Image (cartoon, rainbow, N blue to C red; front, top):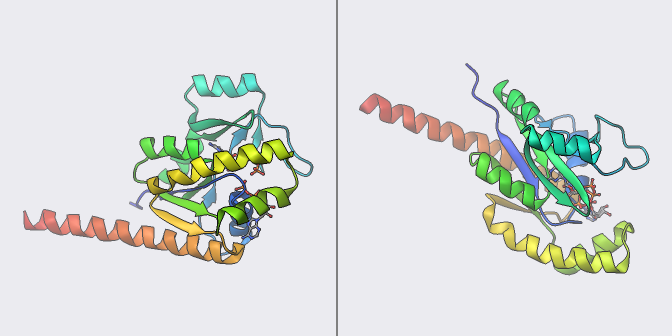
Length: 204
Ligand SMILES: Nc1nc2c(ncn2[C@@H]2O[C@H](COP(=O)(O)OP(=O)(O)O)[C@@H](O)[C@H]2O)c(=O)[nH]1
Ligand SMILES: Nc1ncnc2c1ncn2[C@@H]1O[C@H](COP(=O)(O)OP(=O)(O)O)[C@@H](O)[C@H]1O
């Protein structure tokens, strides 16, 4: 029987480039993991498609999903809910496929508790001033929101030590390469641990 797939969690502070790196990863043909499309109550942006970018839900629908235990994790971020559909994740892992989550840090902490065997990757900015430039450069927020995001980002960065790996988002291309290498290493480690156990069983 094929072994269960690996759950990969990419997280990091707001504005570090999680969405950008995730989109770049999934535009590459040799990316062998499956992206788990999140649920959200935020309104679709221009060009976003329901069931492709997100599953767009009303607050009532989202709260019903929480009550029914349909979410592996969820968090409220800048006034909207975001969450990961648990059935998709479990079914895909059971098929032996790797599943990739791109989520903010509160959600990642919940996954850590429920799926301690997942591979946790923290995307870090080259510096705080670079993070500030990226948040400002995105041009989507007011000065007040930017100041708030930066304060939150400092707190989010402090959560870095909960992760297995830190990847610096220097260039998008190099961040993608590093993430792929970590996933390969994650598989090798699991194989190594499984083989060691098998050996132990033979001895006993
Ligand atoms: N906890 C959690 N966070 C999510 C999920 N999906 C997306 N996010 C995060 O929600 C934040 C806001 O995403 P979005 O509204 O698309 O705006 P962005 O700031 O342009 O990426 C980002 O930090 C995403 O990583 C999810 O399923 N769960
Ligand atoms: N490696 C990078 N170098 C320069 N700018 C980047 C890089 N990665 C992302 N950005 C830019 O930083 C901003 C924030 O990226 P985004 O993907 O929206 O972050 P997040 O999803 O973590 O909130 C965007 O304007 C994006 O184009």
